[in-house]
Length: 352
Image 1 (cartoon, rainbow, N blue to C red):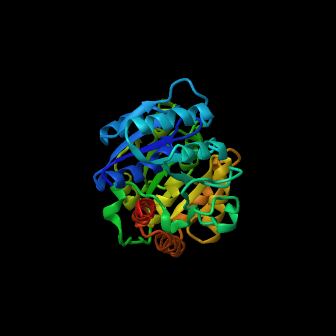
Image 2 (image 1 turned 60 degrees about the vertical axis):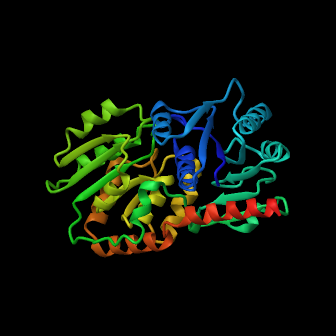
Image 3 (image 1 turned 90 degrees about the horizontal axis):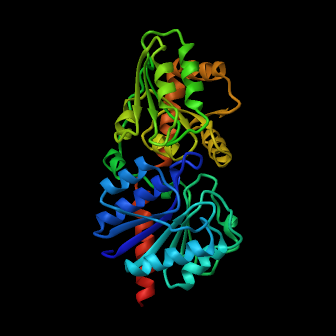
């Protein structure tokens, strides 16, 4: 695939960074095949744009168009034409049926990333939904040619995770290393609530690493709170070594967004918090599959409840082993290759 891949996705403090970050995994795989990548955004974050540029990907801002509108689609289609893109990838809940149809009518192959069903009809060549609960019957209203890639077998993991395929985790009797990672922005500062819960744990042997995403606006407040924890604490911002941190962690506290899939792949025993409505179903299904523990809504949970959840898990090595095994068996790390293979097949079909 030596041509250009055009990705249309957005990010922001309130929206989070998940749409662009999972598209980044697909973009990296495209680069590995020798292709160029162009991101088109109506809203983004400086740290995220820097990451894309460092990955040798182009970033173009959408000009004065409402995200998801037909004017947005028109500009995206024109950009694809200018850069000779054959494939367009669209990721976001504001891209509906009319948006997809416009791009298909413009002659592009289209992959649509969907966390849940929000469009009246699907015109994309491929609809990708890696969630545990994704089923064919969710997408009854689609074109006859639309291929569905559903379930964890199609989880998109970024390049830094690829060499961790087959990683075997040791589960210590006494959990000491705790990782806190609540997404790229965390606008409501639920991380602070988690920190206050950890402050209540009377254990001098804990080592805590708190990751604040590049879009997190509460860094200084978190730094002040973290300094008062009796355990060893590191506060990191916009890190690039997430697989290493996940391998280090005996227990992780995470939002039920894209990071929970990465933690499952790494076999990290995890406690999940819901920070947005669309995360609730994900957290519930992870809990049902015994691949993580769903603590509850980050907005409603008390620091005391968070503390109790952490203490319960660090004191139960068998539960940590069970969570680790279930998570790593769910996601093998080859999802990105399956998706690219499906895209290649569509291309070959078009040429015959």
